[in-house]
Image (cartoon, rainbow, N blue to C red; front, side, top):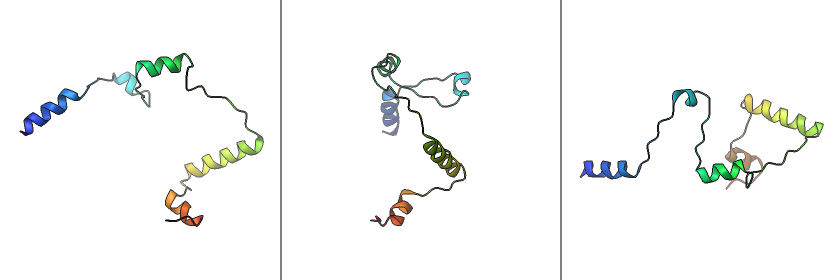
Length: 86
């Protein structure tokens, strides 16, 4: 029975091999060919570029610094501090 269950699981799994030289380059994202072509041709996923004001740039850098220093709150702690705890 157990062997039959393993065989059923193996039948539905797709196994791929990722070459080491690709895997070592960093994050790897796998999407369908249809999604890739849509992104490639700009049909969806277009990102509008914005220019930050000096104040926004300062806030962004401060936020990045706090993340790096692990000065963040969990969602639970944030809700508690805002008086929204459930």
